[in-house]
Amino acid sequence: MRPRLYPADTLDFASSNGVGILSDAISCRVLSGMGSEELELQYPAAGLHFSALAMRGIIAAKPDPVRAAQPYRIYKITKPMAGVVTVYARHIVYDLMGVPAKPFTASNATLALEGLKANAAVDNPFQFYTDKSTVGSFSVAAPTAIWSLLGGMAGSILDVFGGEYEFDGLAVKLLGRRGADRGVSIRYGKNLTSLEQNENCANCYTGIMPYWVDMETGAVVTLPEGVLYAPGDYGYTRILPLDLSQEFAAAPSEDALRTRAEQYMEDNRIGEPTVSWKVEFVQLEQTEEYRGQALLERVQMGDTVHVEFPAMGVSAPARAVAADYDCLRDRYNSVTLGSVRQSLSSTIVEQQKEIAKKPDVTAVQGMVDAATGSILGAKGGSVRLLDTDGDGMPDTLYIADHPDPAQAVKVWRYNYEGWGASENGYNGPFSVAATLEDGMVADFITTGTLVANLINAGTLQSSNGTFRFNLDTGEIYIGGYATEQSVDNLQSNLDGQMESLTNLQSAFAKLLLQSDQIALQVQNIVQNGVDKVVTSTGYVFGADGLNIHKAGDEIETRIDNTGLYVSRGEDMMLQANHLGVVARDLTANHYLIFGAHARFEDYSGNRTACFYIGKESEG
Image (cartoon, rainbow, N blue to C red; front, side, top):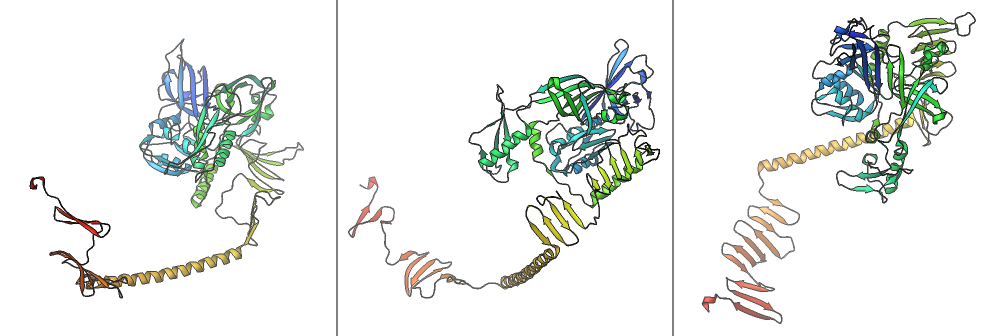
């Protein structure tokens, strides 16, 4: 398919050819990665549309054998060399570099992408979609370019929720995983023409140092040995400090911390370099020999491909992570296969995410609307009756996006055994299907109302790990716990709880009434004035001051505005008022001071000494 040129302000690339088809193009290639797409075009200065090639213009071209043509905005045009210019363009979604979003917050991936659309500070023609329901805390604290918020910065959507991006026209899709395993195999001696293996140890660590820290108290838990080493002899040391604070609600034991850290090392293969293969292969779908197996030789970004090259010890499945596609010849120049491994820091973030799929009425309605829009928006396609066994009688109803089953991607098949739908071509696998023997199967089912007799989850042949809900008998079975509970018993327990709650509410109401009465009495007393308060400890607050005296005690103490008075019956033992201090039977354990110069001191043996200290001038 030849690329087409459009003016810079174009948003519709399907209804016309724009400025025109770039038939004179010498070469046109799309370089794709997981979340990146760029186009390079070589065009002669004598070409028909040379004068229309301008900065910010848009070139529409196919990025792979399956997807529709994508729009790429021109950002660089070289000067003519030997009468030829090279034009560089990025996918149109890169325009989001210039679209800022206002501050907002979101609690899951769907709301975060919806927030990018709703909070755009300028006109934003792009749509955002995700199949992830990951829960997480996402916030935009200050106006920020939407492109940066999608990924590439701390706290971005990709950083918080994970996933893989796919660009489709004006749509940005955040997917749990791009691509599929379509059965494509690349073998030495069949279609493999070149293979280059690369190893990257940039993210290869020789060990980890796990720890747990309490941010409030500062308490830290580490291992006695400090570091856990990956198996192997590396010739160097590179240790990753691994924060496992989010893995434990409270301080873990050393054994628990060690076990979790060892599992992390195994899951993330920290001591293994990232291996990738750059392969060049013949696309057999374009050969007559493999015409009936065309779909098997199509590769899209993110697809799993099976590579077989015994001479290099390569025999493994790998994902298509980068591609160089020739748009003029409709074939790949090369495909890079490897693992889509994140950095270790982002892997740690990924561990902290919680997956919570909770469809509600709004979500169901949204899916209904999406399905309706997809069906009503479908254009073209083919409906055929096929004779699959060659007996001259049609036996299969075929509905697909292409009249040729070998070329089709989205397919519905109906026959006497049942029906099935697939996004992987004529021979499936069928992710949605129904047969008389096996019933209906689907990757997911969304429903507003479910009517059923029995709901069963897990393995039917084993009670371990299963969940069964019999709606006819009202029994719930949870495997592994040997628990059965009838709906009647549940209702009885619920009624008992409701009765207890009712009694509690009644008691609480009485307590509120009593508290209201007490408050009213106190209010009346305060409003009418308080003359005297008597406590159970013998304290009397009245007009005469504070009297402290209990029945049976011989000592009484009174404090009023004139002073302090302590008496035993009629005898005054101590008084302190404006006349001074008068006391009976006064005892000084150590010394008694008179004025500024005289002091009586107590000595053992009932002896007392009197000292007078005068000034030196007094001799």
